[in-house]
Image 1 (cartoon, rainbow, N blue to C red):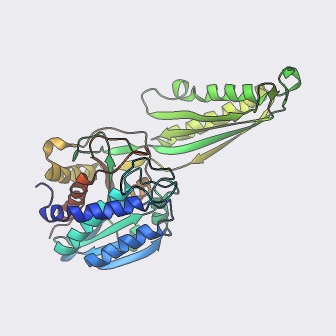
Image 2: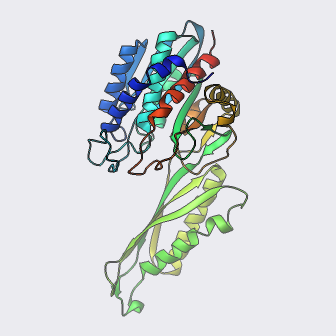
Image 3: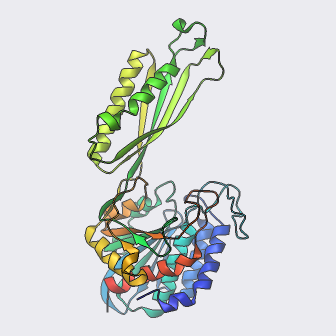
Length: 386
């Protein structure tokens, strides 16, 4: 079964929705206009319930099927990125410093397309919970929605999400059982030394050399403390110190990211960072403190749900267009919180050649909206048949 004919019939309407959303991006939890647009469409479709104000601007809409049964959750993220747009499109962002550079406008559109179809046909049992989420790019909106009780409140049994991916052929799906996206943390090291004249370093406690030593040592954690058969990343991404050539400064600052899949590896990295910062600060006679902030957990797919969703994807795009065992990636995704709460699957959908996500010239490919909407709709119909 290819793209659902009824969904293909309103592809132009979906394009209009998506381009409106693209021109009007909103950041993190401040998705008031986006949520209002979504609600307006859902009311036009005739969904049975709309519950607003979850995680500030998130919402859950319920569509009842034709018979008794469980509830399947489908999630789309709504927020944009705090960055300028450089596409030159006639529907480019009208908001300075905000851009839909990750395709969340397209994700919202695909779920709206599925909502329109499912509201018309209702060829399923039980219910579908349409989850429109703010703050995926920062703030962990999915986690906030889970904390506010959406899974229990709406009786969600299983949950699914979809993300576009450039440079993968249009309509091709991929995922993997178990961990698919990494946990993402950040670390900060503040170094307090004693500055002075660059010509008389013996009279100082130099935070610059301490920063270099700490930075170099941090980069040995993966190569010397971590099992080389595992997967983890420690990346030092910022060093800030000093102001001119002949002054040794008082302070220095380091910052970076950590990506892991195994909580035990995450804890090992934290322990090693603490030991390195403590030891190197003593060696260089400075005061250094580590602040380690845990972010989104690893995104872990349920193996059975991946196998099921892959069958659905093959119906939509064909046998050769689906790879359900691609392995793990080091990116991160707050859908992880929903997968911690309920079994489900996170899939990627190829959108063809073009700039990658988070690039100022990125744009979602409207050609894949009917594909994603068909995938969502068929998930419901196959998971909860009449």
